[in-house]
Image 1: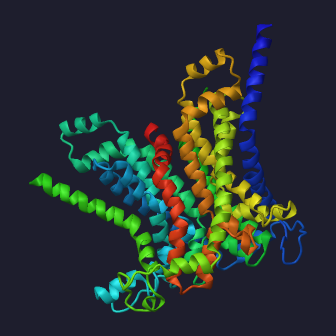
Image 2 (image 1 turned 30 degrees about the horizontal axis):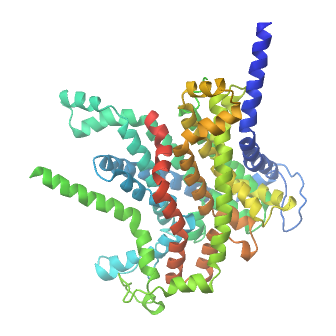
Image 3 (image 1 turned 120 degrees about the horizontal axis):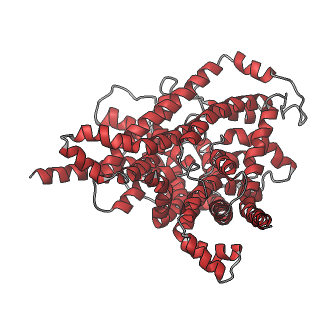
Length: 302
Length: 275
């Protein structure tokens, strides 16, 4: 009898819980999850909205086409270089900035807010800013390097085939480092001061303290934000589109850029979805690592 | 003596860091004050010969920027309010109720924010067309509410878990139902968290680019992001106007962030400190 009453209570608690999460869940499933799954289905069809809005199952032909594409290797390589370069450099820079910022005692909130700026600017503005500063003729950097300081004989073409990817990486680093810096800075504050004192008594100097105290204690925050940074970078579209639109040729084309071009310039939805499936697969590997590491869901035992 | 040197070095370092973060925006401001003839000079001038606000006037009066800003404001405000409501409800549900599959759903929410938007937009494009949401602001409002949802739920979830159980029990004894407890007890004490979510959703909506690029075609419905990107491709050489437009578009973000950014930073880093 008592058990029955208990389970009835639990039942109503669950109903209330579901009611509270329902609106969010409907939006997330309806506008993110269903489209994602729907896209998987497109990837095995001949969907091309230039020809017709109807589509038929064509098996793996889209994937065969994509593997036969001579640029596919370059695009994948760009994507990997992009993610690895941006994430690793961002983490190193952010680490230095975070340690430095934590040693400053005044104006903490103001400084943190200002350092955070690049992360809150609209993507289009970030793209425009750097396109202008890195411009091959009237860009500030070129003027300073060539005309004002006479360091170089001629202007650098930052958006030429050989430099486009590097420039895109640079701008994404500028975009991402504030987030990682702020996270690491908070992580550093969470480390017990006593550990440093103990290390100092044991004769550990600054670098040794960093290696044996700071890094191990920061491992969690460090891995979570580098994963997040890597995922954002791999999904990055807006800034690349404004800066180079993936060009010249495919020199700065990444997977999202390819998906966009295939879908909305050539209107081959089927083929674009095949690229999406691959993109999704790569992201999910990182997402699973993230889930495995994060403490956010583990502490769930209410 | 050594102390003073360290102090000076610190100030230099700080200036350098702030320079890296802010200079590009400042350069846009400098550019916006130049005249068209000055823009053509090589090497570029480091400060306008005569700072003029003409480009602001041109962008504001001759180009449909006010229209774009009104559109973006409308969409962003609706998305922000909806986002704050929906995400705090969901976070409360997750934090305070027991129900089956909770962990799985939480994980789904966490992963949903990592879905690549370029992939989602393809099916969404045809779905939006068949449901009459294509080229409408309502369609974008719903979508913009959704994109910041996952992050917002996680931030609020952290806040709500910190609310002591006794507080709710006291309210329950006073005869409050779960919804009343949520609106009258939980929400008022979670204001900093809600502010953080508000800033985050507003920024997401205001800054978003890809979805509006694909889902809007009528020029009078454009958001600032497409307005600005069109500007780059069509008026590629008018960099002073481009600078003015960028500055105008950045001002709302800047204001909100300077006012409430502290909350957002605290919300974002709460997990980092706990871990």
